[in-house]
Image (cartoon, rainbow, N blue to C red; front, side, top):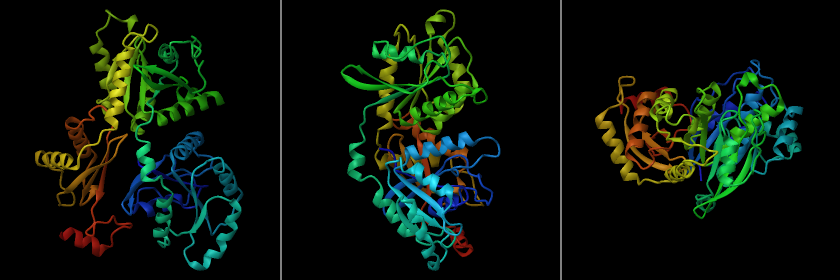
Length: 458
């Protein structure tokens, strides 16, 4: 089971990003008095009492974005709520209860997940009496907090940990039925492929673009095993979305990617790669999902074009996804479909692989000796040890002296070393660099000038 997610929600300007930075112990999210600064979901790994959790910040509910990105912001919020194991509903003590707070509370009533109600900006205990009006919202256990004054942080983290899925529940969820998300732009043959898997006319197939409007789960069997194929609507470019059907089609396709174990990104071999294809690939990459690039309708080009040309075309178009395998199929005739499914199963198993800590440490030390990280503030960044803390995706945490000293290029180098030498070479790898404190704890605030000077002397 993935690392539990704790998602922060609420109306604009209640201090969600401040709480995110406060709990993360770092300035990661922009904090500003102007509503709507946060648009995308921001995430950070947090450890408390030996448990890891992924903290997620979201945009303000109910705001009209100044650049007409309101729908995109809402999609990010909805995705965060869908993924959450625990929700932190933030309100503002100083402003008091507002109609928009009640709208947010009503939205969360439909969500069957633990909710903690945080009365933020309660900088002093004298403000606690003002929090009682928020009990009218009827959502979650209320905790007065102050990110600015560092008030009740330990209590909040204890309450979060208490509501996370138990270790036994996580163990039981490690081997779910494999789900395949079939995604791509319009008319690339997704529904035809799904019907081939189901060996029946399970979904409507038509030449009319946009025939499929919903995400449809189709169960099928292969070699005695039960799988689910999720047929998704064909996507259009953002500027071509004119109706609610188009909007919700995109939303459901993205949601299908999030809940799938492996994504199959379809391309039509007779057409060039489009902006929509790039957007889908980027979204799959953002979600750390195992993926196969599926070049469909290959019977139309068989003997006319070598597969190597399309392989080179895909590699040049998606350089950050060089690890993704490529399959050439004819969905309507079922050609190469079984080989594709077998490869998807292999990716699913790769994503669930665990590697012993000594193997990772030996590999990291060899990588450091072969290529040291560049100097940062006249110091050489160090990695003390590493360990795999999760699967699906494989998640590696490296304890070091200063995470900010490792530039993106060096992080890519480390990921490539892990990918080339560990048994998950074709799936995404999550890499976290975490600062190791002198007492073995992660600092929950920025260092003081004195502490920073002492660290420089180490």
